[in-house]
Image (cartoon, rainbow, N blue to C red; front, side, top):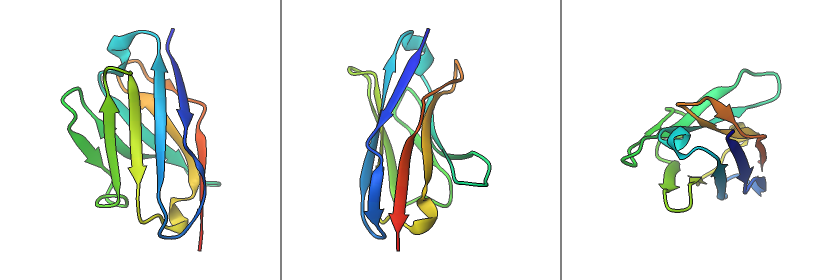
Length: 113
């Protein structure tokens, strides 16, 4: 059984920064490839960023250059550094293990203009 626990969400003004974290508890092989998704009210869940075991990140065009994904393999933790936040970044953010398709409970990010 795998459990994902996100943290780090909050409310910031446009231009601000937040750092999200996702702790993975359970089978370590499930966390070989991981991703961040987000879902805004009334919209579908969308891909934000992903990372492989080598630490190579990939990003949605909407966040490229502003967000940075990273991982701490020793602590089995995933991070998302979000800079230059915009009101359209407001959403519930979820982490996901790509191999085992586990989802966390989400952490809310609210960006005010």
